[in-house]
Amino acid sequence: MVDLRDKQYCPDLEEIEDYVQNSVFHTFCEEIKDTYKCNEMIEFSACSMEPGWNVKFKKAGRSLCTIYPRELYFTVMVVVGRKEKEVVEELLPQCTSELQTIYHATKEGNGQRWLMIDLEDEGGLYKDVMNLIQIRRHS
Image (cartoon, rainbow, N blue to C red; front, side, top):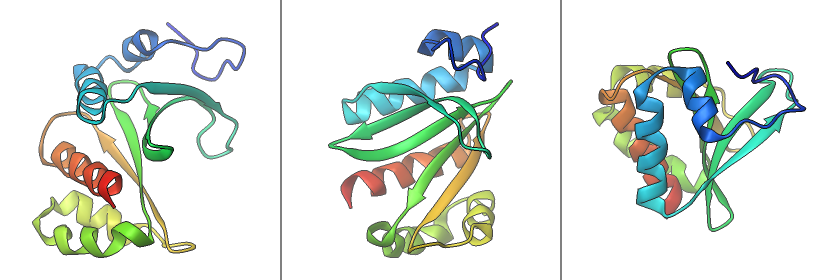
């Protein structure tokens, strides 16, 4: 199994998928690629909070989301900035209670909230994340 903290070896998406061991990871990545016609970028982060290899999706120079691989699940970071805030807050009452809790618990800094959302299945939270990414793409 690949070591996601080994800066000397850049894993490919299949190796990251093998690490996660959850088919939702593959489904999520494919849906992002198909919907937004973009490819993943695998980057090493030396950030003290989340060191290691992660997967980023960008479209038109704008970040859609960053995926932090875990064993059996993955965390998706979606930034809600000034442009997205009003639309997201209008949508929030229709979102899962989990996303509402994450949103309200995430401190706003410089007009942004960096939402860290754990996904392990294709339930309501998965749909919420896809809606956030759609808002981010079109704002």
